[in-house]
Each structure stands twice: as structure tokens, then as C-alpha cells.
Image (cartoon, rainbow, N blue to C red; front, side, top):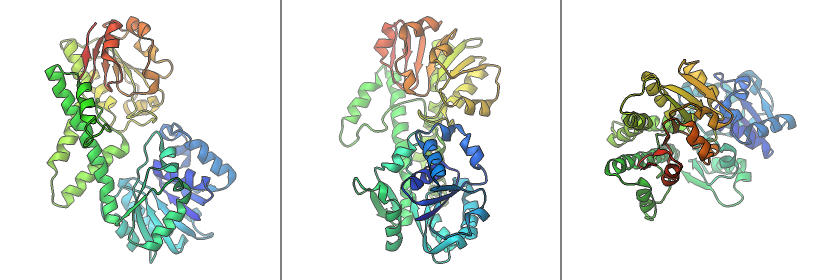
Length: 429
């Protein structure tokens, strides 16, 4: 098939790489806000496993063509599929682009809306297509493993009201549907709402578990026992029950706000969603509060090491990441920060600049701990899971480890001579 992809989101880059990889003649038109030179130098794209290699492979082999503007995208053989993957704030741009690029589509072409827009937007896009059909394909990619989740999907959530359009999308994605049937079809508006509802439920589980962890802290209970007990209940399960220092990310956070907007526009106010978002913002300050409590509020002039800035392992993004809230709180108290992250340091510097109380590290994580009073773990990169405990204890002046992701065994940390404070967990030497 001939496919035109428009957008500069991770979903657009992944679709361009994957569809050209399986033989579709693919043209990729990035959004004007982030052209190919900017994308190819961005940390979030270059750090995504496999993706850049597959994009370069497609460009080298000719199955993928990059174009800089809409004039270059049209004029040749017409396209069978128009794949739209732009950010929510580019919605009006997308609608205008659909009208301008419509002449490049063949009769019976399908618009695949892979963007997270308000409920009903796919129908509005179809009204601008002059007879072509539009379907909603929920963006279910996981940042940090986008290639894997696209090429070996657990499911495709397809919003489609036309049998012919469904057949066309199935043919487009046939190479990724061989192991088992992964398509779940429903009406377009239902698919658009389902995408938002999924992230709302996941966020609710996380925030609820964080709330329970706070209660466990107050009662002197190790929350790990509570998590295991809850997860063992077949009605609940273990997924998204890990307490932590808050969630972030461009898509997850954005989808929650989009769901809140949908609720508001429909005349319904969600007190539950408000609480979920409030708990998460409050939790981003939890490591600072634990540090404050340990030192009885005397923080000025102290130095701490932070491991991890990215909102999750495997990415270089810091959008709404807990580290941003933490840094602001520490600097307000005059605390020097030695920050280590294997991928997100450029994004941090772009956000906060060369701050006088910030020193950054990208090599050996233990280097960041030299001369620090305490270590705060924010992002659970695999490189942080098994440090040299003897060296770590020697480097931390006050022997304090604040574990924002509960990845360490409190008893083991205490046996190494350090004070351990996790989310709903603690131990002392």
C-alpha cells in the first residue's frame, strides 16, 4: 500500500519505521513544529530502542521517503492510507492539513486517526475528506518500547463504522497480526473514549496505591505486604499497584487532562479524576518531605544526589516528570543537587538551564554520590538496581537513601549501614 504519515509524535515516527519495514511505500511528512533535522537530534527519539535504526534502514532502502512540506507530499501516485499522528494541541492544524492533502488520496482511501483528540473528532475529520472514510486507531504505544509494542501488539483498538475501511486497516497492519487476532473493533466515538478511559483507570490505580502507601507510612506498616495482598486478589491483580513518587510523561498526563476536558465539555464534573491528579502532584513532593523530616527541616547548604530524571526508564523525556517538582523544592531550600541520568540530562538542562545549584552526570552513577549527604532515587533505570553498596555507603555523608520507586530491599540497605526511606517502607541500620 501507499501510505502518507503526518505528524512528529512518537506514534508517527514508529508507524513510519514499521510500515516501511514490512513493505508499504511510505511517505512521512513531519509536523512543521518539529521537522526531521530536529527530530533526528532529539533525545526522546534517538534513545528509543530500535527506532532510529529502522528509520534509517527504511530511508536507505527507499521504502520510506521523508518530505519537508505538503507540496512535496502530493503530486505522485495517490495514497491508499493517510495516517495522522499529531499532538492534541495541533488538532486544528491537522484538520486543515486533511483538507489540503485530500487531493493526494485515491478514491476509497482511509484516514487512520492515530492522534488523541476529543471524542467525535474522527467523525469531523471524515466530513472534510470528500467521500473517504476515517477510522480511530488508539495510540497504545509504550514510550521506551514503542517499536516492540507496534510490531508485536497485544491488541489494536480500532474505532470503525465501515466494513470496507476495517478490511483496509487490517490489510495495512496484517504483518503485525499473524500470531493471534489482536483487533478489537468498536464504534469510533467508543474507541476515542476508551483510549482516555484506559489511562484514567491506570492513573487511578497508581494514585490509590500511593494514597495507601502514605497511610502505611503513618501506621508503621510495610506497604509491600499490602501490595502483595491486594495483587493476590484475582479481582484486583498486580498491574499498576507499585507505589512511587508520582507519574509523568507527555502522553499519560496529557490524556488525563484530555479526559477531564471531555468530562467538563459534557457538563459532568469528575471529582474522582480531580483527586487522582491532586494525589499525583502531591506525591511528586514526597521525597522532599522525607528529606525534610529526616534532617528536621535543616536543609540549607546540604548536598543530595539524584538518580534518574526521565519520567520513566527507556526514554529521554522529562515532561511532567517528578524530578522537576523535586528540583524546585530542593533549590528553594538552598540544597545543591548532583543529578545523574543516562539519557535525560539534555532535556533537564533545556528546561532549567545552568542552575548554580545543579551539577549533572551521565557516566558512572556513583560519581554523582561523591560528597552528597543523601541519595534520592527518582527513575528506576536498570543501571541503578544493583549498586556497589559498600562504595555507596562510603560516599553518602549522612547514609540516607530515599527510594522513590521501592526497588531496593529495606533490610539489605539497612544492613549496609544506611537509613532507608521508601514509599510506605523504611529501615534503619
